[in-house]
Each structure stands twice: as C-alpha cells, then as structure tokens.
Image (cartoon, rainbow, N blue to C red; front, side):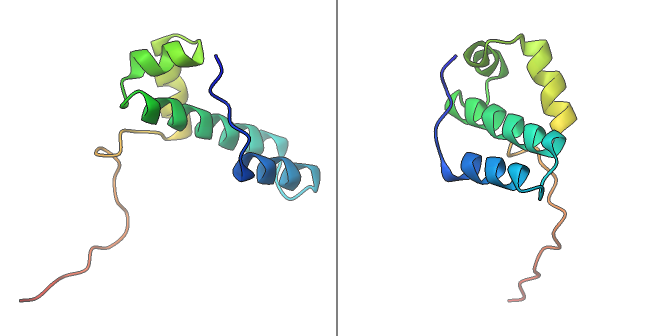
Length: 87
C-alpha cells in the first residue's frame, strides 16, 4: 500500500522523537493514527475499503481504531461545552 505522504507532521514526529521530546511508543501510535485516519478519509470511512488500502483485515483495522480512539466524525463525542445562544 502506498498512501504515505511526506508532510510536516511526520517530520515533526520524527524530530520530536529523536530529540527525546516524544517517546517512540507515542510517536508510533500517533503516526499509525494519522495513516488510519488518512485511509478512512480517502475511502469515505468505509472500513473494508480503508483496510484494503492499508493491506490489513477489516477486523485488524477496527481493533486499531478502537485502540487509538478513532471513530466516525459523526460518532465522536464532543467533550467541549456547547455555547448557549439566546434569541
């Protein structure tokens, strides 16, 4: 699968890890999260298609999504208090 892009976020993760500001474990998790989110966005959040794009099973994708706290944008819980608009 070739969905990797050279972007500033990946470079930042690498630099932070090499400088000791970010543990390898956290950097790997963040990188994996970015790759999975990119695949999901490219496939309209169709997990089977995203899994195929990543070269893994849908079951493994779902497991990694759960582990990394990734959900559909319309299913994510907003923990920010909502502003009340008075008319």
